[in-house]
Amino acid sequence: MPLEDADHMDIQLHFKPGIRHAVDASRYFRSLADEAVDELLPGDQPRQVLMACTDAPNIPMRVWSRSPRLDSLICGLLPLLLDILDRTTALRTGARNDEAVKDFARLVNRPVAEGESIFLELLGPKQPFTAQEEVILVIMILEGEIYFISAPGVIHAEVAPQLYGLAIAGMGSYQYEKVEMAMVPR
Image 1 (cartoon, helix red, strand yellow):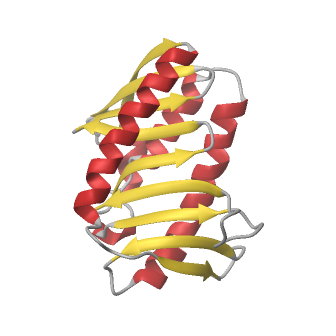
Image 2: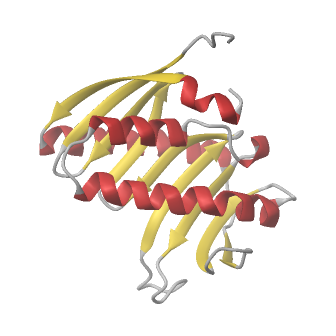
């Protein structure tokens, strides 16, 4: 779906309230991501990066990718990564808001990274690349599609084609399906 058509996507939500649902969903989503990581990164070593892109703060990160264009891809992704981080924080700290979940779903269901596969860990600014580091966002992109996101208190994963899950700590879990809406010519 072209980037400009992402807003023409209907998101059908199903919510299960409760901490137990959030915990169970998180475990399941992590198991899906573990399987995908094993396929994507068999034996690969991460690259530690302090990314300095124009119009963005320097952000320490750990990156796994075989792309020869990695630096330019990361600079292109950085605004999206920061937006995802802001939105996951809002989802975790706010009251239940189905419209915010739909907006998040539209944001993360757009083609990214020019079709490349990348696994990123964004690190907090204090003590990166040490045993005391704080991982603030994990994102897995498979062939240009966001497959998995983990941020403190929030996990998002593709469960099956066109079917996604979102677990929010202390709140519950969402399952959603994206349905492409027909574009009506004007």
